[in-house]
Length: 290
Length: 274
View (cartoon, each protein chain N blue to C red):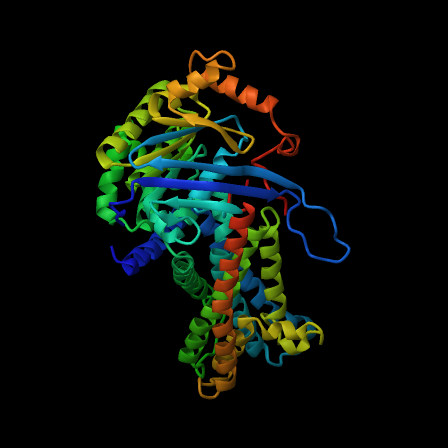
């Protein structure tokens, strides 16, 4: 599917909100009057990513980063605000959005008895890719990520966690997405593999005009890859800009020698100023009960 | 790429993936096949067993075919139900559910691919069971109308798939207990569909449940064809009832599934569990 040539904004998020009720399913009976136990996971988040950019969102665990990515991935409906991928709304035009995006998450998530080839063929075919062409691309991507040919046909359960993560990265790249969503893609990888994946991300941007949203708590990685970085805390974006801009901002409040220091200073300062009503947002990735 | 060819390729992806998974789990497939054969034999031996216990030999041959049809049809329908109803539970357990739902294919494509595999694989497995079981009993099926039996199986499969798809929605709504609920639905179908007895013997309050199970009409049709040699024309009443249930249950199943996906997307339940 082609992207409209006059669309220079790859991702446009405006006032996105997501709230979970952790009580689970409630049957509306007259005597069932317990109050909702709401957790605000994403709180009026707005940002834009220009086409061809690598945009990073950094934040500590449970700050709402993954929820945000799930909403852009069409896996979660936002409760408020809007999210558009190349002008297509993630709820109204979800089918079109899905053809433009792919995602790599921190969990490899595969059919463990199937081989990398079988898993990736399945993934490719659900995106309408041709069988033979997909097979060639799989071999090419896996080879470049350092997976040996004899491993390609063995069940994934026989591979190490790091190798499985590389196959997950290959799945994300396989469909040549125009917008690639990376949710801590290199977690669990050794330094050499990390470099391979990071090189691949940069190459995807250079050669395929792809836009990347990288969500991470690895400050080195964000610093190395991203053009613009947003800092997320307690479901909100509390600062954004290029790395020099963030360092400059943090320097006004405390130590800010690099991105990590700037992050800690900005987040620490924001938490001190946190209004009471939103300070109750505790486990932001909470799983609803049955 | 044309939207229709994308959907066709997508449906084929599910057929191929399920075939590959079945091949990888071949050890379990052999176990289930042996279990199915033994189960069919054990249930069918009740007929000659009753004669041996009571000394009364009336209708033993009739009862053998009656029970055989029940267990074989249940073996088939159970397989179809498993493949469709536990599709979500399997994906959730493996952690692939988010990736499958991120693919640019329609829900009916996903369900259609899984359903086609379920029906074809279920038929093949049941055929193997029939071949083995036929070695154990001397069956007189000279008057049987096989074509009618096949029509009832194929038409009934559509209706039964609808029930399976509805059951598949449960794990989308209930993260942990959905799979358990699906098993309860499966057990209830076994009870009310007249697998081993006519539904008329069920208590009055329970019998109406048999009216909404497609398995009830599939069994009535096949038993009529196999035991009495009735044709489709002779059993037009049963056929219409089966048609009516199927026409309602398949679209209803897809609709329920779609609503459950929407609910899961609103509440954050479309994620890995286990």
